[in-house]
Length: 517
Image (cartoon, rainbow, N blue to C red; front, side, top):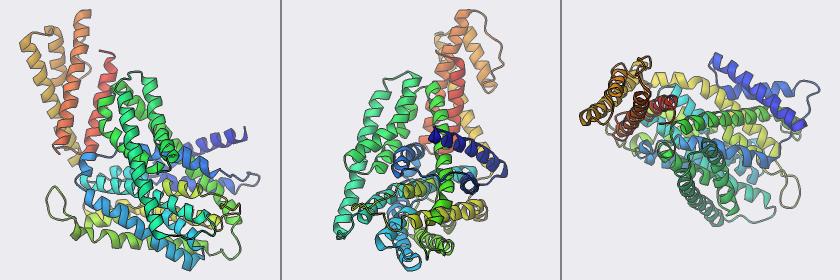
């Protein structure tokens, strides 16, 4: 009952804080951490300790999967070079720089400093994606930021697993070739397992029409990918990311409108609860972690500030060379310094490094306490809060100064043009059916009026049950034609992924309102 009560309190707290943050237009994670700290400082509140395995097993898979499913493979192909450079080179550079500074400034043992570097090299794809969409970034820049953050997580968490293995192996010699081989085995094996899980889930979902079963399968998929990969001694994180990317590409072909709307709502709730609970838990644990710090670590705020500065500096040095090293596939010259500046400042830390830090084992292989774990948790939390507050609150200003943000008129015009194209495709289909005399004239006229009035739902009801059934069947056909046209526009690079998702969601709502065909 004690654990259930704590979870319920965290859910209520997270909901209230998130609502308040939305009104203030500030990042909710920062307020959630501060609220957790405030609650923990209240006299009489018991100390909270969460088993590390719970974070790694329960929290990470669905959060990574949800972010991976939203990734646009079409746009990813246009930016795969900078994404590859940032996802590998930047992760290794950040981990090395943080590890070196952590030894020099914080006095951490080299093995735990390596763990801290692997943890802090991971950015937050959920926060980055939300910020990018709210700021209306161009499609190529948006997918560059989102994909870099997502694959950055996969790489850094594989590196984190290697680092943890070194840290808990007390007295064991460290071989760089062996560590490199383990890294490749973890990442490559995880990719194979993720692809296999995605293929199996695809075969099952294409034969499933029950909304409840579809929802259960969607919720179980990230956990299945994670557990199977971990059981095969590969990277569960990489497996989840690969499965999410592959299934996200074919999601619109596997389910109907009702199921897509339901899955979207369920996953939105799951992601919100998991993120909120993790940030609240970190806030609740932080005062206890600070009290448990050994003597001589009272300078941790300045140490965290130094680590954050190192992360930003390494990111600047890594992204700016891309302005000359990488060509965009759509023409228009090389990536400009403005894109590099936005990508640099969008590298906020969030739920992923926090969850990874909380999953650090409590004990080494010989049963002794893992030295430096409390300081690693405190420094990780402080750096996350710093980047979320400083970079999160100022990213809008950076984007506005860069001139990359799309004007609201541009987004509205793109959606309006896409709507017109969908309506024209639907009207062409209706006129074709009218020429064939395959559908009653009453239904044809009703759909034609609705389309010419931008699918106005206040059209008069056609008389007769047969005509009404024919109308609904024809509307289902028209929506299918519009969905096909929408994906054609997307594949031809005439609309962005954000516009495609919005219009597909609108079509799904229209189809769901019609009922079964």
